[in-house]
Length: 440
Figure 1 (cartoon, helix red, strand yellow):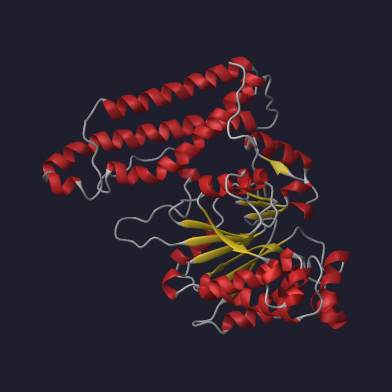
Figure 2 (tube, rainbow, N blue to C red):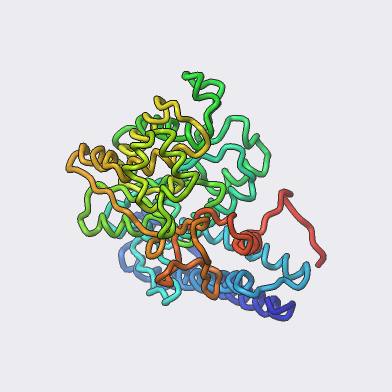
């Protein structure tokens, strides 16, 4: 940020947008049409007269969203610098306002009535429209879930994860399902506040109560697959999701909609599919001591020879339609439960072996209608695995880009880059205190 003067200008722009929205709301009709209620009180002609007010309210809301987003972009971009505590407090205030707008956006359709067509979005808004946006009238909205385990996570890191996801997806279409140790996040803690504020569905567990005593000492990255598998099994058919994104939580943020490509495939008539995300080329499994060791420990030298010549795929992120994702969780969960090769990271060895040996494809083919395994490379895909990347390229507002200069929807392992860690600290300011007082 170019100093206090710039922040004052940004603040003025946002305040003008707020004033315009308030004027639009208060200066038209004293009665706000609520979906499902207006039609029972008024005739169609009266309802139609409410539409200009509703459309104006939507337009004002979007201008306010753009103003806040532009202000935050300016404070987070390359070369941005907060000159003093006033600058920092303004950025924190803008972030809180953006959180409020995220929630208000969900209620806006009910506020203005479903019969009101929203005004055409500008170029900036069209670019950011998530694939998980609310369905058109008469269409059934797809439901997606982002699923992970967050044992012992710091509240600030969880905040980055859930806040960035909520910014880039429709809250009504995407659930966040996280497995937490029952000892984590007691009531009133910062972690509990984050979980509640962003509508996270929490599934608690206690390792000491696992029925298989061996699994009580397993690494969380291993036993998560048993927890996830059992949760997926437990959901009634009517509660199954259209798509599931499995992800690490501590070191992941979102720059876009992780379900966009899956939604496009489904729109085009695609069937069951599982997406595995590759690390940067050309390093292979056999060339990496860690990955080679995990495969060798679990499947022996023969297993390593079978798959070792392939580019590494990261088990920390994967995506699938419901049946495909369940087939994957069943495969990995069963191997974790029965193979004695347990140590930190072996789920990645299993993941790579199943992806390249044909075992995952065979499991997908057993699903009704079959299923496809799709490999997504790091260079042109929408998930960036930072540790494997020799260099990082960001655009002017700080988004990490792939080799085709397109923003990744998901940035995984951002903590391997000090530059990204510093940027995210500015982008998602956090205080463990519920309220912070700063000089006026």
